[in-house]
Image (cartoon, rainbow, N blue to C red; front, top):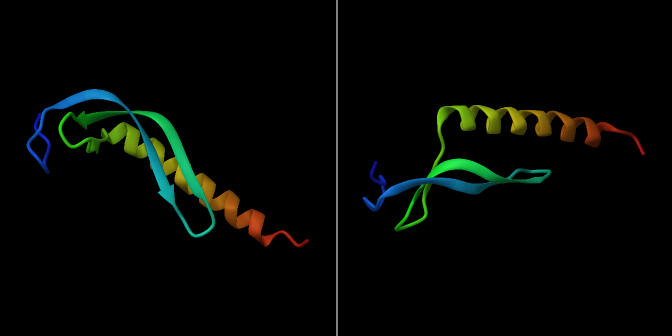
Length: 71
């Protein structure tokens, strides 16, 4: 497979996934992905994307619950 950005060679590896939201920052280390050996762009399979999206939804829900607590 070639990278969509630079046409470099993609190789299987692991990479961090980072997202910044309104109330938190989430870093997931060692996520399986195809990684461009030229520019470093990661491509995640559908299974990994589904798990990442599920984690984000869970953290969104818990973050909202945390912010609704009365001190």
